[in-house]
Image (cartoon, rainbow, N blue to C red; front, side, top):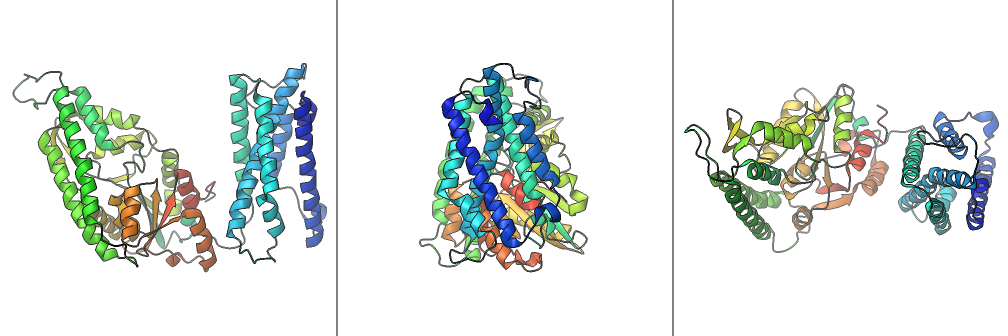
Amino acid sequence: MAEDCADDDDAKVAICYLRNRALEEMKMYDLSMKEWGVDLAKESSPNPAALKNTDFLVATASGKVEGGKGPAKIATPFEKTKLAAYTLGAITPCMRLYAFLGKELQSCLDPAETSHPYKKWIDSYASESFEAVAVRTEEVLDKLSISLTGEELKVIERLYHQAMNLLIEFLSAQPIVHRTVVPFSGMQEPAERRLVIFSDFDLTCTVVDSSAILAEIAILTAPKADPSGPENSIARKSSADLRNSWDVLSRQYSEEHEQCIEGIMPSEIVEAFNYEGLCKALERLSDFEKRANSRVIESGVLKGLNLEDIKRAGERLILQDGCVGFFQQIVKKKEVLNADVHVLSYCWCGDLIRSAFSSGGLNVLNVHSNEFSYEESVSTGEIMRKVESPMDKLRNFKDILKNCSEGSKHLSVYIGDSVGDLLCLLEANMGIVIGSSSTLRRVGSQFGVSFVPLFPALVKKQKEFVEGDPSTWKGLTGTLYTVSSWAEIHAFILGLYNHL
């Protein structure tokens, strides 16, 4: 149908080539069915998720584009070309996803493996020739899209996303005949074992560090000159003085933090995981963090902030893509999962964290952080210091687990991004590092901590997995699992579409 709609000879030739490759793939299907002795006409009915895919493709090629202005009757060559572009936009995700999956699956196979039932298919999708077809499909889509308007390009973008989601739904709908390590939340029996999820806040959940946000609120809301208000008001520095004070504090923290990190590093990389040595090193870092907080309090930078200003800033705080959606799904399935969620943070102001999550309906999250001291909703500049250091985080982590699991077992996950999270990451059954902090990896590696990408680790763990026993995940093994996005965490803990 796309070939019929294309008005350019080169595009017609390219689409014809792609169609012929699809026909070759269909022949491979027929051969596989014969080899396996399967008669699809007699032994199966169409999978509903597969029908949704094919119905979507045919509808798109027919001009029935949901939310778009597809013509009821094709009247002009340009309208036909537009349909060809729409159709390629809906087909391209399949080519790209299968090329990706082929390479990923092939990397998991033993090169000497010859009897795997799907080896022929995996090799086909992982081949350079299939990648070339995927690239050519994308090139044809680009060519067909050149003359489209911005609104029409948005239609293609929407079709692309819809097609990819339908493909993921199709893959997720296939039956699993044995226990797997994904989703992680399905490994425990909720009646016997509580799932406890911990997350850091700054730069794990947020795009920017909360300390800079709080300082900026203070600077923007400060008087332009020293106030001469009532005697009982909380005296504040001018905005210019606050800016200077904050710049000095920030520069001093960065310089001394780097010096502290260099000072705690062992002279040589250890050969084996050295948890005790790491703890002693991070005790020194803890002392530094507490001294730094004392300087902030003494500077008066945090004095005079209005609670309402803090809450408004929290509501506008930009969080990492997928973070809110992940926690919303956990909260939605809290009873089914028998799950608790705890945010464990160095943040100076728990009200900022609570307001950041309140807009996503996540006001039920348990927040463990420092807190501002207030007089009539105005900060005094003092901080109730509860979580200042790696050692404080570890103490809170252990106390929370002890309280959560009284009378039952637990399965713990900790999600963090910085060196301050290291001890909690290692203590948890599953420590997940998000982002790419060079300091975290440098310190961890020096004390024998291994950082393993999550997907290859899951493949290896699946081969070790016996009857779904959660005890195969253990803390203090010296191995942490790395991800680049919250989408990976969501897929691992809840599954792609969370069918629980």
